[in-house]
Length: 158
Image (cartoon, rainbow, N blue to C red):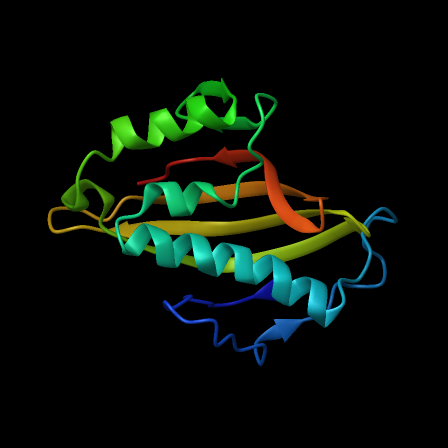
């Protein structure tokens, strides 16, 4: 499903009024996400945004699979491992001014099966001196009953 625009506030009040169904001719591996699955995936992303905007990188990281196999690609490099990804975030965003306020929009949820999904979207940081933004592709797997990001490819466009 595609959400335009969906700026996720710091609450779990989600509006699904802008949803558009996945066309029937979509790739056969993509299945329609049930409202509860969509809501659970979007809740993970909402929680990430809330944690980030509270200055809580560790809370933000709770959405990621805590494994050495986690894959994070950004800035032309690939980082493997939850701890290494966490350390990268702490080094790059070492203070609240650098973190800014995180906004997500243009979210598109594609369920690949009962326990895997891809979420595409746009991110932006509102900071005092600039507003960097870009796109992301998150691969989610359901692990021990929880949706976890197992791969994150994030690009910067501005």
